[in-house]
Length: 212
Image 1 (cartoon, one colour):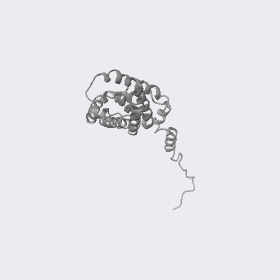
Image 2 (image 1 turned 135 degrees about the vertical axis):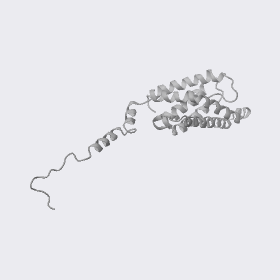
Image 3 (image 1 turned 30 degrees about the vertical axis):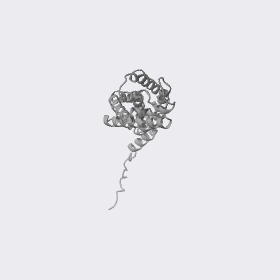
Image 4 (image 1 turned 120 degrees about the vertical axis):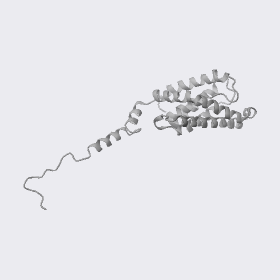
């Protein structure tokens, strides 16, 4: 993960965590709590790719595990967001630019369902049975609904900030010239293609015309 991406990632993660804990966590909505942090991780992963998404998800999940009023085992949410960031990074669009709203919503919907089920599964493995009392089906449906409603407002903004402030100038120049790491090669091929034809015409010497 490039160093230029760390400040914007930290800022977005902290902002999402503050909103989730201090605002959405106190709304007492039925079912699950809107997962702003998941939307931030998905948005950054769709710009940075699987490796960056995995690192961002682990860091954001670990902060959520440590932030009060956390009542679960440390590392549980970090594991979930790490896997969600990696999976969303595998679906990264070309140059990190999402051209279809429906595809972005599809990724968010899949991440909402998978993260809820995985969080409940890990909780069951460590002895946390809270999901059984609340109802796993209600948690999945409510998490899917809340995240899809918030995704059009959160994910595009996160992707825009990730592209604008987390872009490496050297990599950006290479991308503009034909792909990462191929800028010089692309310019060389262009020059060769332009100058590949003959630059002169053969002249016939007078008196030496070709015989039939």
